[in-house]
Amino acid sequence: MTLVPHKKAKALKPSSRRPAKELCSECGLCDTYYIHYVKEACAFINQQIPTLEEQAHGRSRDLENADDVYFGVHQEMMAARKTEPIAGAQWTGIVSTIAIEMLTRGLVEGVVCVQNTKDDRFQPHPIIATTPEEILAARVNKPTLSPNLSVLEQIEQSGMKRLLVIGVGCQIQALRAVEKELGLEKLYVLGTPCTDNVTRAGLQKFLDTTSRSPETVVYYEFMQDFQVHFKHEDGSTELVPFFGLKTNQLKDVFAPSCLSCFDYVNSLADLVVGYMGAPFGWQWIVVRNDRGQEMLDLVQDQIQTQPVMSKGDRHQAVQQSIPAYDKGVTLPMWAAKLMGVVIEKIGPKGLEYARFSIDSHFTRNYLYVKRNHPEKLEQHVPDYAKKIVSQYKLPE
Ligand code: FAD
Ligand code: SF4
Image 1 (cartoon, protein in one colour):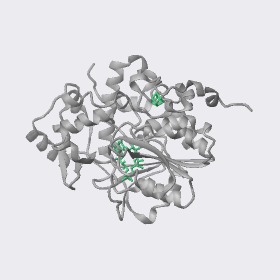
Image 2: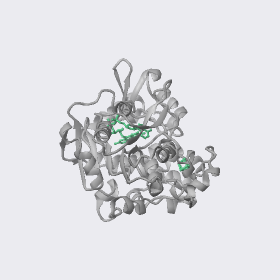
Image 3: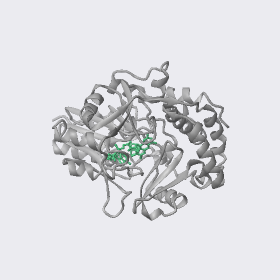
Image 4: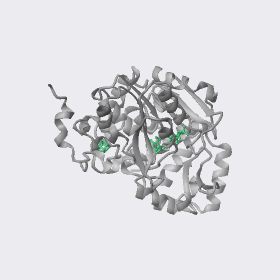
């Protein structure tokens, strides 16, 4: 029998090995024998988004098309929400609903998703779900780095041939890179956008610094109204304006992987479900290819949709926020609230809000890579991101 390289590589497995070092996002690949492929597959060692876009979608981004540059290869975008939201989901539960439909209709035999551990609602516990109940138990974000790909070996062992993987960009990039080695007949990828993720310890620091009651937070989201919404155990909502965040204390909270990430929009998933390109209260759907359309079609009768919209001009707000973030400026709360109200009224909306968020993060991350890993800058920053960053004047 001829062994495929990763099987020969079993002896290489020590799970403490993380070739991306401090840039590792703990995607889980290195917990498996697929670590053999890490030098090609890791999103932080070998940025290869255009090549993998070709592989997954049949073409890479068209750099002359502004929507492609920002949102990646796509056939369609829309805003959507479930007519009957799933209680306790991050938004309205479109992700969990699609996964459940795929499983119960027999399109897949298992779903890679992330539950939490018994003792800690924010500590991720990746699984391959084989029942709707297991998928439902994975609803809501675990806003921490999650080793989703650590279950890859179990796929091969289980003999599953049709699989759905739910994940964020860095996990999906590594997954696409080893896709052909998994022995699957069909792989569906349902992605979410992702930014500013943290380790479990970093999350605690964020909650302690930002919320009035860190221990009762069950959910939070940086929303389109320029506020962080914390939901507490008693059902109450706490709002903290973005501009009031203690930037000086929080600057080092985000994981170095996320400070050097340029795949906010999960370019390699078949279907992406987020919120940032949609009006407040709605989810944002990006169909990247036919497989993504097939997945969305399964829930058409359970969702309301509306076309995406775009309003405002982000450029000035982004340009002003670059030096403010760099210097760790924190506004007094009254000023932060006032600024939030003004920006909410006249600021960017819909797709323009998404562009605002992408611009702010890409400029910050470009500076981070330039200052901390200058040798990686050229190869690691994709051309579409260089194009986005070039619109702004950056400090040295
Ligand atoms: P649900 O039905 O509640 O399902 C959530 C799914 O997320 C579950 O299937 C679970 O397996 C998966 N999941 C949970 N935690 C993780 C994790 N740490 N890693 C990988 N998968 C996980 N959208 C934006 O538009 N802008 C953002 O900046 C943004 N940041 C995000 C950051 C993180 C860490 C995550 C996980 C998601 C982020 N999203 C972002 C997506 C958004 O918050 C919602 O997850 C998405 O809209 C789906 O909502 P839902 O109600 O349909 O999901
Ligand atoms: Fe390995 Fe994933 Fe970390 Fe890269 S990000 S070093 S592939 S665990």
